[in-house]
Length: 329
Image (cartoon, rainbow, N blue to C red):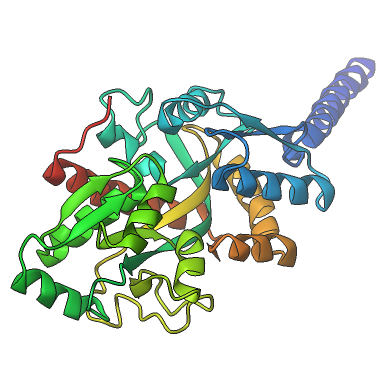
């Protein structure tokens, strides 16, 4: 009898130890993310659009949600240095990238971007999209896209199209438009956008695709005419400018965009928690108002939605870059 009781006591002790061990492990397993500061890498210099968006998000999450996010600028090679750094970081969710449309472009634009955007990244949440506006010089008679195409057909070689440089969003938007419509035009690359506007107003070039933020003051002042905008619906900033879709060009989709991206292999539950954290920021009045002031339409949404968007962007721009034979060192 004593032996039986001893065995029973031993079994009970083992069960209790197992239960206590399991309960003791629960807090670590159920611990919410993040348990330490998040590093949000900006692959460009301070002061630009990507940097402003990153700091807006980091400030809101740190001060309003109580989760510290630290912005770190890692510049070089058109954003490739910072992006490659994140792609090669530990997939624990604590090193993230405030990425942009460049991340869906650069693998096809550069001989060696330092990472593979298709396999080395995790898309977490799309932050915002900025539509592109087709601007025309005062010397261009066309008032809309269809009139422009008619002019281009009637007067071949009459259109010079500026951009801030080869491989920029402005250049690629033009190449996509040319590919979809058959419009002929000569690409004229500049070193930055300021000189483009000077020559566009002066009539040395005829067209320029630029983001809504850059285009708006010139359109409002009457210095330039906007022939179309790539937003799904008309922009409140430029309500008189018809969308490309309205004018029969629903397949023409060109945007500047920003998104939160991590290295491949982040656990799905961590991705979900990061996504929820940034969605709270994006949907807040403070952050959404700031995004709108930058010409952006706040987005948000699921990781799956962003991954689908990212894949479509990669496919589109790979085709454009190959067809136009654009390469950067």
